[in-house]
Length: 356
Image 1 (cartoon, rainbow, N blue to C red):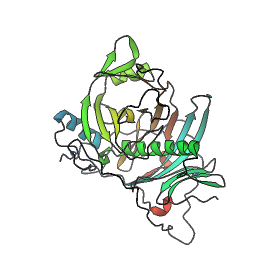
Image 2 (tube, rainbow, N blue to C red):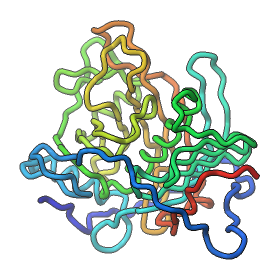
Image 3 (tube, rainbow, N blue to C red):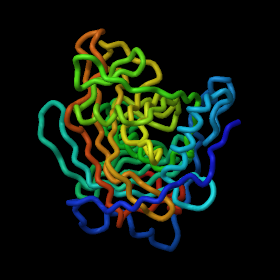
Image 4 (cartoon, one colour):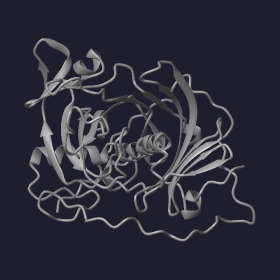
């Protein structure tokens, strides 16, 4: 087994994002009455075949498959260490509380909505996540009691798949929280395969990059120019999630990461299903193109300062290259003063939501 090298972290101080509103602390900061958190029975996750690497061995956090090339090992070790500021080998981030100011743009109707959202995450089972939207009183929860959506005074059980639109919204926010966790603590990734990739310009198209025989049409020409300067690594891992059409984190994703050469931190990221869906399958999971703009130092971690999430556009034919929306569908700004990496969270923090 191949483990990440220790002590490769580099120091880089980044300032907080400009223009992020700083309103009152989001709801949910007050501990429950009676002292201490409520204790919930732990519900076992759904049974599934264990995920294995290219050699058929069970996946293990931070461990690369035997036979990974030396070049891929070097890039992965830099990725593992690039967000870590502490001493020794990077530690897993088993739980966190993170607050974002988010701008969500509609693909069809146009326009946008500004929201503040607070995520609690704990690496347990399928990944326990609680997303809170204090201005609207909404919350999305995945925890030991199941998946829930709180909308005002109504609590919706999202195990009922008839709530299709509510479930899509729920899965979208949970995926964003999971991807934030993966980018913030990449040394915790379970890796089934890792291979280096080289980006090349696509002749006659300033908006596209070619990776071997594959062409990806990026949101902007600026990202294409930057992509040609990055060090690329492609991995298969279950620890990233799909922003549109998640399958509940039951399988591997293909993730293409463009790393800043001098730091090893990801700057451009493509997250997609392991197998490309048929071009005319409207219900199939779709990819997301993520740009990481800057990093914020908090405690022993570097966290993404801003995330621009571009959703994949439906293809118009089988020969069309993979294409993403020009403007980010979701734009997230970290609120450092209301973010706690390595937080102490328990099962009671992810219980069925209760209307206030």
